[in-house]
Length: 76
Image 1 (cartoon, helix red, strand yellow):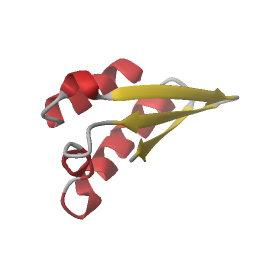
Image 2 (cartoon, rainbow, N blue to C red):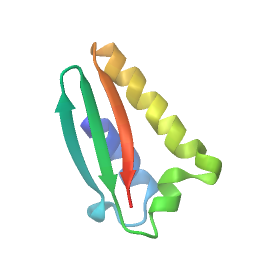
Image 3 (tube, rainbow, N blue to C red):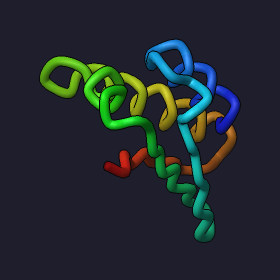
Image 4 (cartoon, rainbow, N blue to C red):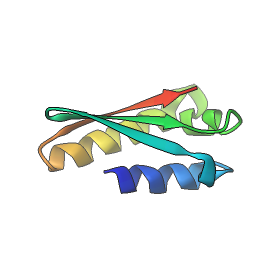
């Protein structure tokens, strides 16, 4: 899941080397915290939040396939 998230985010942002993904596991749930350059955050969120919602949906589907739950939070 983390590799998928890193790939998708690196394709969206202008400075992929500055995207930091931290992972917090608690039982059956994983929360990914994403930090990026301030100018790249709007690219991740997208117009009206559509891009980040699509990423969250794909991440949740991938996690469900592995019998887990996953969430995405953006750190500004």
